[in-house]
Image 1 (spheres, rainbow, N blue to C red):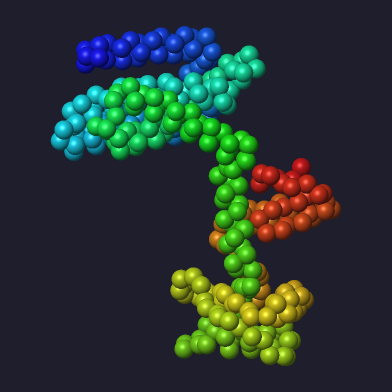
Image 2 (cartoon, rainbow, N blue to C red):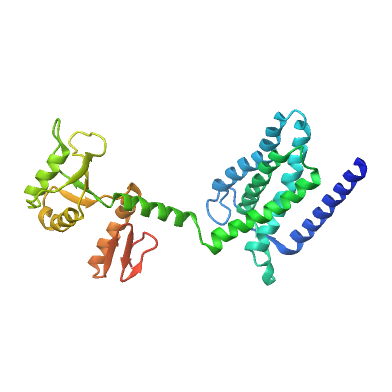
Length: 316
C-alpha cells in the first residue's frame, strides 16, 4: 500500500470520527450555564478554576508538543501529531466520561463544563506521555488506537476508584489523619510547667506528676521535649511519650480533678489539623451543653444527640 493511500485512509478515518463526535455532542451533550466572570460560586467558579484550566490547556497543546522537539528525527512532526492527538483525545474523553459518569445509558444526557474540560485535559496528558515513549515506532493510526484504548481504561479506573470503591480525597485525608493519631496516641502534652535553663524535661514531668497529680510511683518516659517557638512570658508545652499504658491511663484519669482551677493542662497529643478542628468545634460543644443537649466531642468529631455534626456551625 502506497504512502499516499495510507494518508488518505487515515484522513478519512479522522474525518469520520470527527463527524461522529459532532453528532454525539449535538444529541447527547448539554452544556453548563455560562459562568459569571467574577463569580466564585456555582458549578464553574471562574476565578478559581479558569486559571488552572488555562495553564493545563497550554501545557497539553504547547508544552508536550515542544517537549518532543528534542527528538532530532521527529521534532517538527511531533508538534503536529501532538496537536492532532490532543484534540482527538479531549473530545473522546468527554464522551467516554459522559457514558460512564452521566445518565446516557438511562436515556439522559451528559453535561460538559469547565471541570469536565479540565479532567479531559488530564486524560490527554496520560496519552501524550505514552505518545512520547512510542513516537517513531508506531504509525499515526496506531497512536490513535492507543489513545482510544488508554482513555477508556483511565476513565474506567477513575470510575472504579471514585464511585465504586468510594476512594475520595477526603477519605484519604481521614485515613492519613487516623495514622497520625495512632502514632501520637502514646503522647501527652503538659502545659504550664515553668521553663528553666539547662532543664531536663523528663525530670520536670516526673516532678509534676508526683506533686500535682499525686502519682507517687515511678513512671517511665520514652522521650520528652518542648514544642513551639520562644516568646517572652510564654511557657512552651512539653510533649511526653510514655512507655507504659498504665502510666498513661493513671495520668488521664488523675489530670481532670487535680489541675482544675490551676494554670496547668494535661491533654492528649493530636496532629495540628485535629487541634484546629477541635478549636472550631469546642464553642459549639459548649453551646450544646448549655442547651442541655447530649454533646460528645471525640477527637475531631462532634456528636450532638447521637448525630455527627458534619459542618461547623451554630447549634439551633
